[in-house]
Length: 201
Image (cartoon, rainbow, N blue to C red):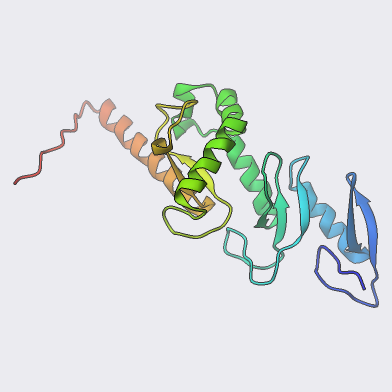
């Protein structure tokens, strides 16, 4: 008996059917097809859903319910995610917030093109090979992202310019960097100069 790729169950009262949605073939109960379609609407074109995640696997948001193995365009492997979390992650990685500092060094189109490039993916693979496939802050081994420590070397980053982080730690690092640059702007506008004192010996 075939297993539904959405709910992961096999029920005699609702047979699993082969159905074609957006050019891809899936095994789904008739009752699960609408939910699957709604989930797929959250994802960018070219995404692949490789079925339900194995039991015990959680999305990076922390929840373990309705988690799927989803591969977004440009990714080499699928990661365990919810449909809506994968869609939100995709949108976030393609946006450049005005306070991120990236706009000062490059146009947002250039920035987005760069982080979607094969060079960026190559750098990420090298970093994973050097440092291991886990977040450098919390140690979890989920889908990982490269975080710019600064934007001075944008487009020609070296390993020391980036950090390998899970989405949760990446978000926190971006927020901390934005807060730091906002404080620096406020101090600059107020005419305050910051002097770092040398430690006493």
